[in-house]
Length: 311
Image 1 (cartoon, rainbow, N blue to C red):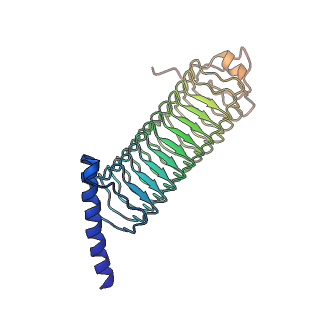
Image 2: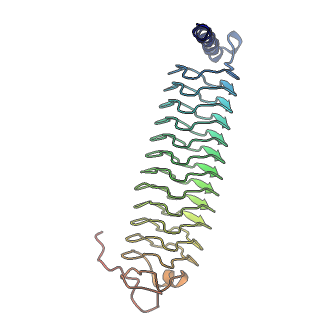
Image 3: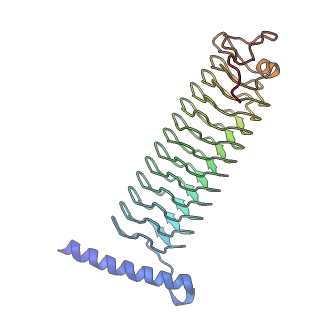
């Protein structure tokens, strides 16, 4: 009985806070900015709530329903949103520090220019989410879903995307530094014009990925699958691609200076010139474009793909 009464009191109090916040949004002098710091609201129904610029510190919202809620510009610190429903929610320009979003649903959510610091999102569903211009620092996305997500001009450092699903995710002109992408998977992921430094792509499964004009430095790609990828005009100097499956990929005007292609599969790759293959490192286990084994030798003609181009 006491629990029911407490829940009723909290619901009334929450309603008053939201009402005062709506007034504050219209005329700051006539209302009060919502501050839910320290509140315990597990399972709360806040669908469509107007919480722009609200303050949430040490707030418990596990399993809460925040679908289509407006949290743009809000400040969230140490908020527990595990398994919460945030599909279609607006978190544009929000500040998320040490927020827990494990298993949360953020499909179609807006995180444009949001700042996420030490935020955990393992197994979160971010299908179709927009993180355009977002800044991520030391965040955990392990085994999350980012299918169809827009991550244009994203800035991510020290983040862990291991095991994440990236079907058709777009990282156009993104900057990723010191990030783990071990065992990520997904068809047609886009990294064109991206800057990728000190990132770990080992065991990734990314067929038909687009890395056109991408700049890569100190990447680790051991036994990665990039079959059918587009690496035209990409900077691949010194990239470790030992044992990588690059079959059928395109390399026109790519920079392969000191790229490690030992034991790599280059069968049917297009656009590889004599100069490019001479600059890269190949060995007796490298499968060259013609289908023969390496190392590549000038004048061998092995730079020509085994099958004629279908284009």
